[in-house]
Length: 448
Image (cartoon, rainbow, N blue to C red):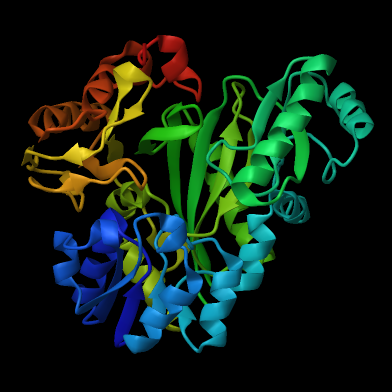
C-alpha cells in the first residue's frame, strides 16, 4: 500500500480523496491554484503546493508543475480525480515514466477508450451493441451523406474526442447535415484539439444509463450495477439515480455483463464507467467509456456498499479485488443532485461569489459531499458545481421524499444555486413515475 499520494485536483473531489486516504492511513499532498489558496480542505492534507495562477490551463492542467509537486512531496502515486488531467493519456505516461503510479487505467487502455471511434470498434469486438452509424471516422461530406441515407435521418454528428456534449450536432436532412459536419468538427477542434468526427443514428428520447465497472491487475473485473443519468440539460447531467426506473431486470443484467466484457476486451483496469443509451423499446447501445471516477460515483457507493475511491487506490497498488460479482448486491435506491452555483431562471448563468450562510442537511440516508462552507468564495474560474446531495432509502419513492426534505434543509445564501430547480423536477409527475429521458427537462419547461 502507498505511504503518500498526490491529489491532482481541487474542491469536492480533492476532499473526497483526502478523506479516503486518511482512512487508509495514507498521507496526502494537495495542489492548489492562487484562486484556491487558503481553501479549508487544504488543511486536511499533509502538505500543499501552489501550482500556478487561477486558470486551470495554467495550474491544474500544467503537467510539469503537477509532477514537480509530486516529486517534491515524495509521493508514490497520483490520484487525478475527475476533469483536468484525469483522462489525459500523456499525463498518465509521464507519471509512470517518473516512477509514480497513476491511479487509473494504463495509458494504452485510456487512449483506446478515450477515442470514441476506437471504443466503438472494441465494443463490436466484445459483442456489445453500438448505435448504427459510420464504420469509422468521416473524412468526406459525400461519405457522411451516404451513411446518413443508409441509416436514415435524424443522425447525430459526434466528435471522436472529448465529451460533455461538445462537438455534437443533430441533423434532420441533407442541408442540416452539411452545416452540422462543419460545426461539430470546428467545435471539437477548438475544445479538444481534435476535429475528428463520426456519424450515428440519432435515438430520439433516449435514456442515458451507465454501468460502473472495477477491474484489478490480476484479471478480475466486476460491475457495480447501473446509474440512470437521464435527467440532463443540454447533455449536462443534473440528477443521477440507481437503480434505473423502468429498466427490466433482464436488460439490467445483460447491459452490466456487456460492460464487463468490453473492459476486459480493452484490457482496462481500475474504476471506469461504460455509458449506454436506451431507446423506448428497451434496446441498449454503447456510446462511450469514461476512464476515470465519475462525479456521480456516490450513487453506486450507496447501493453497492463499496468505497470506490479506496477501491481505486487498492487496485492501483496491486491488491486484487476483495469480492466477486456475486458479492455485489444492489440494495435500495439512491439519488444524487448536483448542486451548482448557477441561476436556472437566467439560462443557468454562473453565480460566483461569497457564500454568506450554509446549512447542511442530515438524517438517515443523507450525504452531502462538498468542500464549500459559509465564508467560502465560489471562483468564476472553475466548474460551477459546489456540492453533491445524495440520499439512500429502501425504495425510489422514499428516496424522492427524502431528497425533497434534504433539499428543503439545504440552505446556501449569498449566491444563486440549482436547488429550486431540483425541487420542481422531483415533484414533476413524469419524474415521480420514472417517465424521463434526456430531453425531459427541456420538454417540461422546468428551466423557463
